[in-house]
Image 1: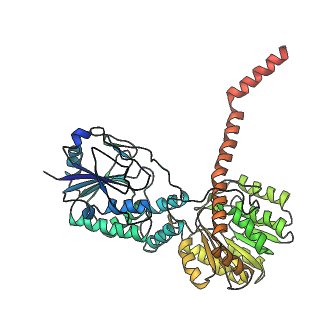
Image 2: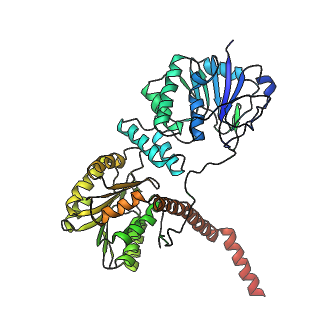
Image 3: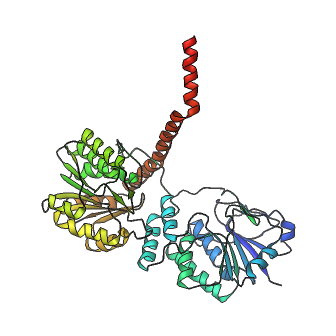
Length: 490
């Protein structure tokens, strides 16, 4: 008879301890253990093991116990780890375990319900602040450089069935090493370790993740936000756009872009790739008040591509119309490819270059190197999408290379990431970037203001769509006609 241990690990006030529905029956099949640092946790069902914390971060503390079953548990044959918000519904663990391991598996985890790629998972964790931006970006960069395959698979690691074998122990040791050196979000590193070790003993459970016959996920007691408080006011000034359109991938950098132009005061800005104009018109808006004699050029064929999607004529018409009405002397749109448009500019004439066209490594490298002669010696260059790793995006790879040559730089990782570098270690551009690196408060304000803008903008657009649907509703139109008839007879 297999010795089975079911265990959880609860640290801080993120979760409460949940008893299974059929507690009396399950006690006869397995030992139930809870590792915790909380003296207030009491249970007649769980064996509570109070431990001293090894890590300040309660999530990392949880991961230590979660991944190192072979080290922290008493002697056992099979272990079942469950998150603190997992509520067991089944009246038998033995039955499920027999089904799982009858296929020859050594380990079983539920398939992720939404995604199948660790790169997309990492970007999602960045977007929702699940861990520090820089930690996740560095980890994804490492996997990208090692050419880890996209869409390899992704698992929801809230519940883990494991046999106590040497192969599983080795896998979990390597998994824990990745979590120690990288993100606490273990779902990012698990596919990497699985692939690197060529582990064949995993059974992927095609269960409904939220609720199935075996368990139900409850809400966490506490929602953890590591991000600063959202704030639309930055140091007494409002750094918000007069115009913003979907898609919103650049929206989170608009406050910084306006601040940068006001403080750097460039005479000539060139951006490679424009789409709906969120970055372009932010530069124009800031230039209008900061340096009204300056010029902003948007270079884009107006067709789109595989990374941005392909544009409709309506996007181009709107772009031209808004530019002509609002920035007739400041903004210009050039419909050429980047390599052709370079002939329209003098050498060493551009103060600020924004690269946001095709995002492959080769394309970004070409854009930077081709336009380098057109930049002043102390210019600032912006690289968008340094925090995107899906498919053939290669901005991060080139960014990590180019900053070795240009050490005066800074990275934002929200809104798909924005790299900021100075071509020279002295001058106004270098001073601004050094100020960013030395002023954590202003960085946090740019991030929080940008994220607030990114979060509020979809609400605005959803409201517009709702108004449009209501205005086009047959029921509304009919009722208006009836009202007119009634008013006529009155």
